Image 1 (spheres, rainbow, N blue to C red):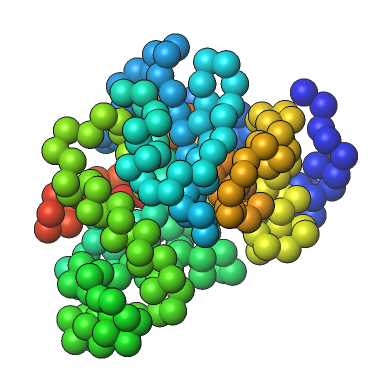
Image 2 (cartoon, rainbow, N blue to C red; image 1 turned 135 degrees about the vertical axis):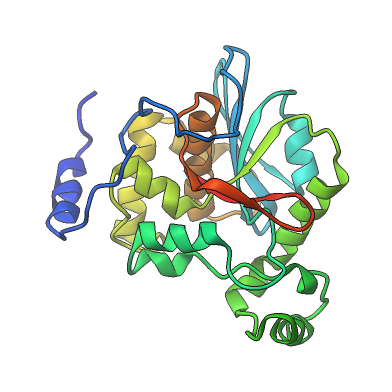
Amino acid sequence: MPEPAGYGGWMRAISQGGKKALPFACGTFCSGRAEGSGLSSERTRSQEAAGADGCRGGWVVVAETGKGLEGWIAPDVRHVVERLPAGAVLAIDVPIGLPTRGDRLCCKEARRLLGRPRSSSVFPVPVRGCIGASSYEDASSLHREIDGRGLSSQTWSILPKIREVDLYLRSTREPRIQIAEIHPEVSFARWSGIPMTFRKVTRRGRAEREVLIDLMWPGWREAILDAIDGDFARDDLNDAFAALWTACRIATHRAVEMPAMPEFDDTGLPMRIVG
């Protein structure tokens, strides 16, 4: 496939920054399966993969079907799951598995993988004891009482999504689909071979992420961006595509888990980031 205009330029610019290429990175799916993966069985032709990212309207979702791609806004995670067929793989940008105190090993490994400055995008995950709080002040006070640290405003802003997915997973004994936690910056880093250079909200940041998406699924990103009706940002859609890329890797045994041997929280949910 020919390179789109500017592709070689921004790749060379990033390479000159001295960043080290990551393992399992490629522009299309990589070969090989991470040892110890507990994710997925062999993908069938009818199995769908989907990626979801939180947005103001709920969740922006992009799914790969046998007929191409489909995008939509779902009000909550239950509606995301119900729209997907049984056996589908859903990669979602939200912490799954919450510590009783301290940081998660998967978050530490994600920050090490990304390095500065992208490591700052991996926010501290709240401890389980504070996710039911109704105000930032109460949540931060509880967090400090339990863990010795306050709760960041960034973490508070995504706490409703964390709580929503946590309640869904703990109330669903036999889930219809496979659900895995991803972090978009980890996915983009593995996809590209090196962490993204620019913040995702900048012009150059969008360009370096969207060129990966457009190489993989030519024409689909702009078509979905124009077709979806709902309250979401362009960056949300790009992150959903990063999640979709990871879901496809999970479904075809190409995903890499952090840590290699996952930890579990006190409810039995895995604390891992898949890329």
